[in-house]
Image 1 (cartoon, rainbow, N blue to C red):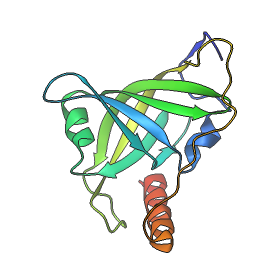
Image 2 (spheres, one colour):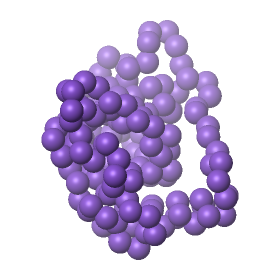
Image 3 (cartoon, rainbow, N blue to C red):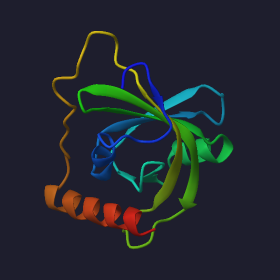
Length: 151
């Protein structure tokens, strides 16, 4: 996909965004207008044009999107790095069936770019582990993903 701009997620990217995935989300800071970047993992692609994600409803991300909906999601996977830009909206201020106060947001995908530098390929995708109670983390992850799919 190098040097191409797509208007929706490709068949290669769609399954990556249908599971818990390490991504970064860039928003426009509501106070100073500068970039604000956060790492998130609760993402779910509804289809090729819509990506849902969930964050604490007290997160700066929520206020940033409320004021300026343009966002960019960065995904490292499928051997490359992808920039997925679009407009986000708040679907739910507090998700149902989830014990934490999480907001549910959705990005309308406008463009997908392969932004990997020339002549390189990702050989190992980012990995992370939860540092709190693993059983509680797994249970919460399942609740959040189910709620994102259902909404």
